[in-house]
Amino acid sequence: MTLEMFLITAVKIGLVLFIILTAVAYLTYMERRVLAFIQVRLGPNRVGPFGLLQPLADGIKFIFKEDVIPNDVTRFIYILAPITALIPALMTFAVIPFGDRLEIFGKDISLYVTGFNVSLLFVFAMTSLGVYGIVLAGWSSNSKYSLFGGLRSSAQMISYELALSLSIVGVLIQVGSLDLVKIVEAQSGWYGMQWNVWAFQPLGFLLFFIAVLAETNRVPFDLPEAETELVGGFHTEYSSLKFAMFFMAEYAAMITASSMATVLFFGGWNGPGASADTWWAPLLGLLYFAIKVFAFLFVYIWIRGTLPRFRYDQLMDFGWKLLLPLAIFNIVFTATWKFLFHYYDLAQYLPGWMSGK
Image (cartoon, rainbow, N blue to C red; front, side):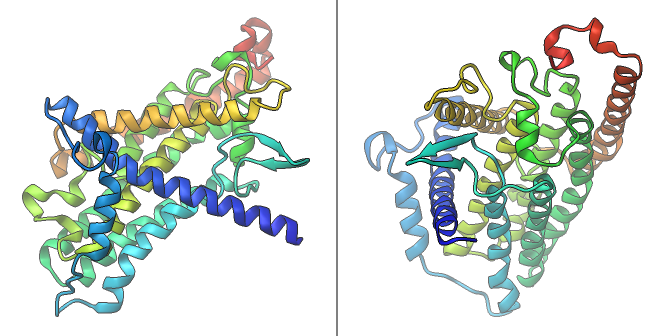
């Protein structure tokens, strides 16, 4: 790697981390304001204009708050757990393509940190590591309540990780690549009608979205944090900045899930004018990507303000008895369609947006 490439990559990493951490902070503000609107109350509105400095005030509070570590914890693992939860959640953004390529000072720069031909597997590997932070937090706290929360989380993650992985196989069958950039490029054209969510993967998207709700411990699947019955779940014994790191990891995972839904099913940066041969087209694509991610995050919050929490037996039955069979059915249907499409040359009978022309 040349010095120039190293500097460009370092700047990309710094920008992505700054944007993501800022987005995580203001996602908490957005959630509190939207839930307040749904529940007909005000929400944070005192710190700064319209309460916009509330995330900054919360961050300062967490940094300077007394860090209480119980005597009976396994200290090294106890401190390591929130780090183990947060770092993989941030590492996924290294391969997520936010936009196409942009020319800056004569240099052709891709709007993502790095890319390789199995970047989708990298995202799944990083997101699956997040459960270790939760399990280690529950075990190292030496508290029954925390341990129960961690164990429930591991069972939930394993159950829904399978449905989550199978839900995207239909996309991989259609595109034929594990490269996220190629998956986005395969959905270009026809003003969004080529997006995978319309091109025979609506069931795959529905399964994916439900599974990522469970993977990110969001309502109605927030059993690991079931404060009504487990005090505070896996993070009962945590305080100060370590407590905040768990929630930073959760909100970063929400942004990751929304970004992946955008990339896999909704065309990524594709949209009207984003493929034009102009200097501002990549910036327009970046705007489209941000709008789609914001829409998914809003739905996350909307669901939290609408649905009740599952019982644990309902959560397991839903994952194993409904989502998993539907995910397998979606794979069989997509593979059968792909075979018939090529074997009988069905493209000649379909509209252009469905045949890929």
